Length: 481
Image (tube, rainbow, N blue to C red; front, side, top):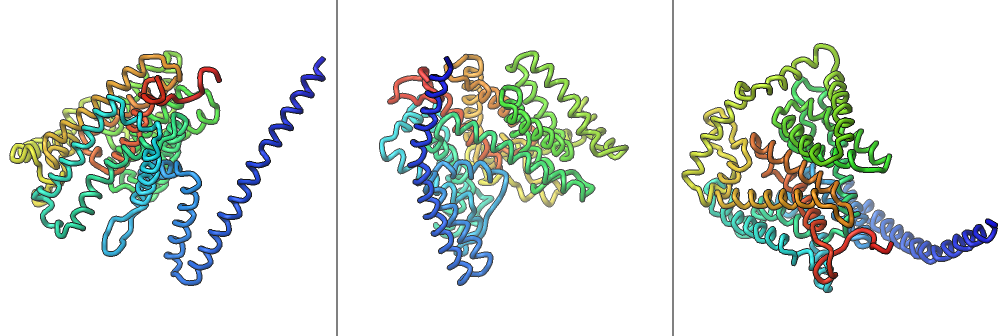
């Protein structure tokens, strides 16, 4: 009785294999073409250029070819290099980097896609996205004006070309991530892969920080300048990993996210950032409000075990100083650095009162160097106000409130395509960002802004309601699939 069914399955497999043959031949032709181009360019570069120049030319050629074949790779590349500063000098202009190349590739992809009448225009017509774009445009225009008029930047401003480049590096480059990524995202599956990529890169950064910490007596910094900067990055990736770990049903994803969290927690502990540690705990508390109670209990038990492991990995009495450093959080008002920050905030509030609307063009106050104090506000909203005025700080507050409101609404409503794990991660992500930036100003750094705008683009994409193709974009499998 099973013979006809077996015969039908064999016939179906035969038809599938036959259908695959043209695709395999097409890939084979593309493979020969790619290989031939790379070999020609590599031979020319090795014969005529220096080793470093040859590597750059070959790498650019390979990247260009792969981008032509799959333009979406530029989005993955931007997410992968977010925590790194990869720059060089071109024609006397410093700071040109791989990030600029990827943004240019995204701009080409976005313009060609939208100019062709793509339904992706619907992403920019949604009322919530329009509101966010208005705030985004205000940040761009007002930030450029205050940068050029700010007294803190007069020493570096010269001709129009260099001034335009300075404005691009400080204002335009981080802000351009949002509309370009929003236009180039292919859908929910791509956003899921980007979040997983951020987690994997975060694990790699954590491994590097842990290894480097073994060679130094101070707190771990990794490739960042300070431990607080390292913590400011890790606390943004940890909620993404935790939300995936608590909600995914795929075993290998659980393993990857679990191991990544362990590594990042170890690096966060070694960084010695009390503000970062508190921000992580707050993000986990927010996440616990949405995931099922059984999983909360399981994660709490596992988290206690992991924390004990993280503390004990250093071994013996050598872990006690770090433990004592975090133990003072039981009474934050008695923490010496908290009292110091209160003094620092008072100094920068006075600076804001002197130029409340336009700011100084920079969040760094060089005059404090003579007083043997830090030159930054150690509070993101004070830093934004000092740099570009109170209006910019208010615009950022509106953006964060808009995202939080969208996240809460979508996390509490069951959708046709279940994207709730993303919204859980977004809310925990925002909680960590806000908590840490009360005592630090990492929101102004390119690393944090790149990650923030990538996640924001995903939120605007997944926040579109289901509807007609002309008004919205539907993600995931169709109801009839």
